[in-house]
Image (cartoon, rainbow, N blue to C red; front, side, top):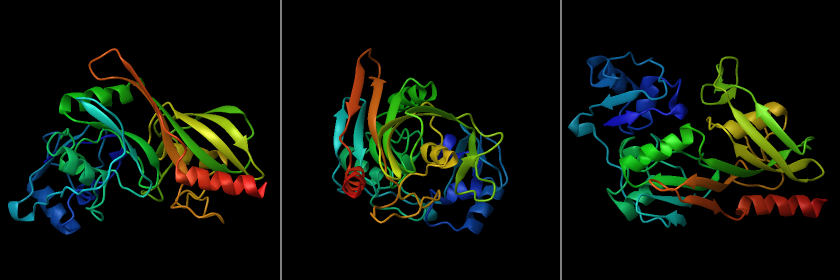
Length: 302
């Protein structure tokens, strides 16, 4: 198996990363395999504690009797755009983008394997077939999928060079003061809680554009444009500014009276150049159920 680490994998221990893609191997077993040379990073044997860096090439030889296969599942997909090289799906809230060590079924990858089989990029291994970028489990919206490795590289380059426009809808707690704002704080792993991100000195440069759509008594409806694409960027930046995303329990907003399955956040707009063409693709979807539910609650209360 071969994996290429992206920025979402940075500063995760090597053994922890492998645990996320190998359900049936214990941490101690993985550490033994790493020490034995069954795992290399950029063709070099590393310690289990090695902290992964973006673009690391991780090669992992799983013993045949311990290998794991991701099963295709007949799960409906809402396809917003498709051509010979790629597609864009509207991922529902509550669905993982790809399998993890704890959840092997019901993910977007399981659904993609059922519909497209082997006709998906495999640059990032079987666990992430076709996946170029990710959305958090409880974030809904538009997600690009590559049908082949050449397209995967093309789309990844679009993202890295900021030649892709991604916009989100969200509702935050508090009255956002500026009609338009630029948030520019560095983001990295939270040193005290590694499963979370935070604004930290020495983190990666991160820029988020904010536009107020509507203000309520104690909440604000926002349109957010990502200039960079760090892990949890919108949630971390808005929390740092004092306006946590509605129902985001990970970053401190807590659950409100109107219940949803975690953060009220939707990727609703994409604009990019079609692979190997000059054609501009522009996609936009309607507010999802969570956005509508919370907006109705706020408007009725007002």
